[in-house]
Image 1 (cartoon, rainbow, N blue to C red):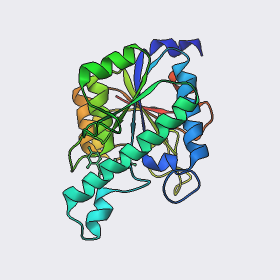
Image 2 (image 1 turned 90 degrees about the vertical axis):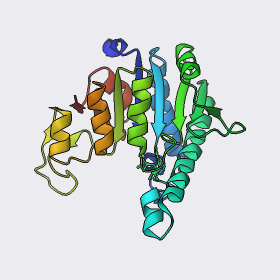
Image 3 (image 1 turned 45 degrees about the vertical axis):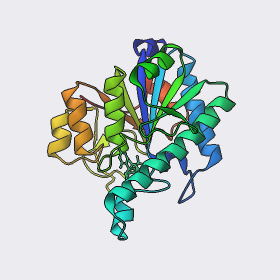
Length: 238
Ligand code: UDP
């Protein structure tokens, strides 16, 4: 377990849905608190932590545009949803005594900081958890791409993608009991086999920047800290 120190700086990506707990929508405070505790247990090891949180528990651009909304407007609504999630997590982390900054790709100075790369790096050096909000700031992207972009800019050693399953499978393990989990898979295999780990632009950006993606289950208590130490089950995309 002591091996967690091989990581100095990482990015944790979670979907918005990870924050809704047993509900079908929105934020579930006990679940947000549980995830904050997971982050704290890694922060205690001295690891510098970046986070990107999705917005799908509140709004997704694609579902808005399916209902007739202009796509870019719908995407901006999705980006705003990620800011709400980031603020909820900031609040839960501060409750645990962890200094946190929410840093938005879309400036909204009364609410959080604008994204200034050097400033974000400085926060990390001072062991503040940086939650990057509003995705990339551009429509037609996802928070998976935002996570890959920020992890590259911050020189993170890896992206940890916390999901509902403990890795990448050759078919959906919830539907197929014989589904096989990959211990390791290449970016190109993920793209060729259309495995839904992350969208294609995120995978391609990670590949081009040689950034490993570690897919693990966020539902396991202590999972994030364990995975950093190389314990438990996970898939490395590299
Ligand atoms: N979004 C966007 N540009 C970005 C990141 C996100 O337009 O760089 C919008 C997009 O509409 C997306 C929504 O924000 O559907 C929420 O993000 P995402 O779907 O990635 O959230 P998750 O599925 O991880 O909860």
